[in-house]
Image (cartoon, rainbow, N blue to C red):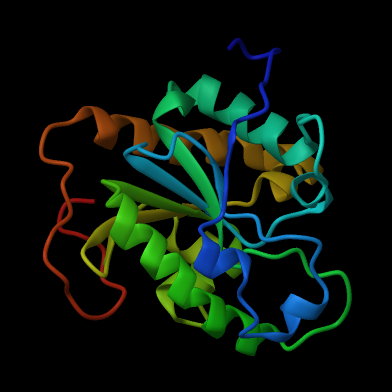
Length: 207
């Protein structure tokens, strides 16, 4: 892939327990459950808020603005997308008003199950919704937390802006690339395995 040649990442089918989930009201809105895309065995997981229209549509895959921006930033940062798996806080696309807190809390079990099964080495949360949901902190914000690594449940985690925010505000691209480069560098280092769980949102020493 080159900077000008983004690709549609292969989608991973949702396991049966998730595909048939009816634990929150999104079960009555969704077209289908979207589990994730990219390399299912990738060492790096990128967490977004929820699937959009592109993911919700079945048929021939195409590259939306989110993926084009994400892959452009990764290319500039030297981050190999073949080692990345992309997933979501919510596994269903909301199409009308819903109880956001309840849905995110309910769907967290699917995310934690996914992480347990995949056992990634690194995580990057993209956008405030993903950060707040994964960090379990409704006040957490990318602009305050970016630039450091955090130990969340034993998984080294960092944060950056949502690709759509970067697309709408091109001035964020420099920071976006900087954050993705941080992931690329740590991935290339030895000793990227998860560290022991610690409390609070304290940056790792030296991060």
